Length: 335
Image 1: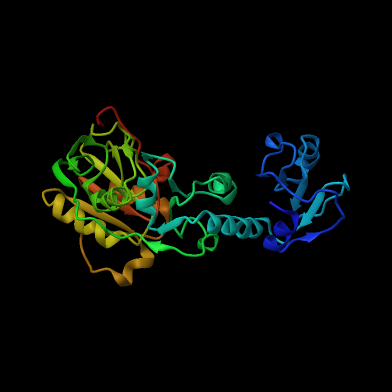
Image 2: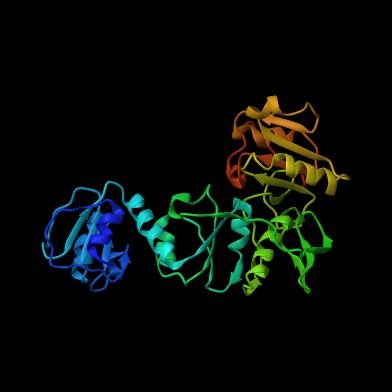
């Protein structure tokens, strides 16, 4: 990339008169710099090492001393914004198609092995910049606007169910599913049937664009996450107890998850442990417990009998906290 293009795209200021006019690549770690690269100095302490390895340019925002006048020193107001503009220009040139979706679909997509022309964009820009910089021509990208800035892309499409293919559930529990998709049987996958409509979106995208894929072993995605416990709320192995806490950090999914539990676990006693801030939006019910502080949750649960408890607004880290006012156990307390 030419020096003048980098300056124009990043809204940068060239603070010296260098001898170089082109860069081979854009690099974030000084140890990875090769001769001709533009080094992005998130950490100005790495600049000397980057120059030692052959950097032709330094992109920086914090005050720094020019130590080599032959290479280009480009000052920008904000490195992240500068990188977004660089990447946006590159992706236009690569003619990519970008789909946006919700966090659940994105995290499920991260658990599917696909070919290089399909990329799930997730994390900070320095984590995926190099992948997108080297992306294949006409690649398909998937991102979630609540996790990754939409500013990186000039045009996005909403991910919709564009195929008639459906997931056929053969057997299910609340947290495991055996299903058939496109004539392939997937037995006892560690994924709740609650997620099947979200997974179907991904698989149908692959089908439409003829993208080869392979489902690997599913892991929990921090939504509708089951944790099996005993009555002392110690974590047990999956499936080894009849008391399950289901953690959901997002309040957006409450209605959908309550509806799922009431339909699929009508036989069970289920509690819904929700933030007090939602009290005006909720109907009065004996199954709804409101908390003002996450420190209250375990003690509130101790006061109730249940099979399942959907706990919204926190994650399972609350199980590692000491329980206030905990009753001392005796020899007669068994799991």
